[in-house]
Image 1: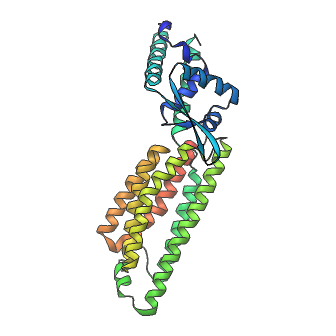
Image 2 (image 1 turned 135 degrees about the horizontal axis):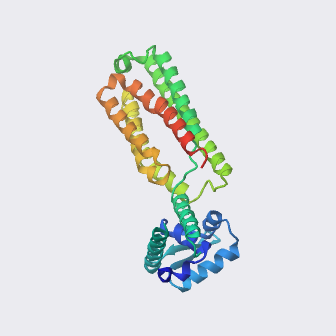
Image 3 (image 1 turned 60 degrees about the vertical axis):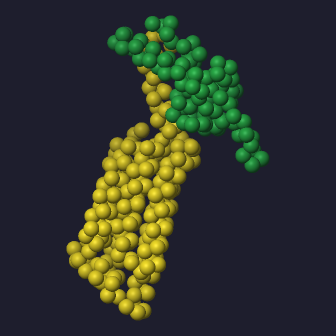
Length: 96
Length: 213
């Protein structure tokens, strides 16, 4: 059963990032930081890891003169996260 | 992350993040109470000005029968009165909700708040424009049902982005708006129930329910 859990989602920060992106079309860096209350570097390393797995997409653009980075979940990411949640749910049901 | 208790905690965390990031939950219940009181004060002033009481049915007839300078005077009074209620409500509602976000240590102007405002504004602006059209035609009696109806539609439309109670409040406002259209003589009474009394009741309800969250 544990085997069905996705190693990519083992950290709380990654679970948090995925949770936020699942219910929003796209979210910028600052919003992620304010929601999760962790450091810039921490978020950056986790989004990079999730991007490498192609679970999220990073979009960089300029709003006026300010650079703005926003993130959104990919179809693969949505599928992987849903499966992870299903596995979590099963695990909890069994242990109860 | 192997034991069930930790997993449960993680799930709780996620649910909380999903909700917080997609909805503006810092809506201040107490500001609802304040807005309701503003509406009742504004309405009382209008009753005094028109020399009517809430259960008097002469509202529409009175507006139609007005003439000359007195009519202009009444028109001006109604518009100023309505504008004052609107501005006071917007200022207090925004201010108290921003304060509440600060207290809950959450951003007050995040994507969820933006979505809430945009979805609230679409029906509200449409209703506002319709009001202007009716004002231009001199049909002030219809302002009460129009504002009720479009405010209700705006609340239902925006309810996906904030606390759930707003949806039911919106539906009741829509029903009151339709009733006010139907029984135009009692339009002000329905307006007082919708904007005054309901805001106070829902404000207290939301305040007590979400106070500790």
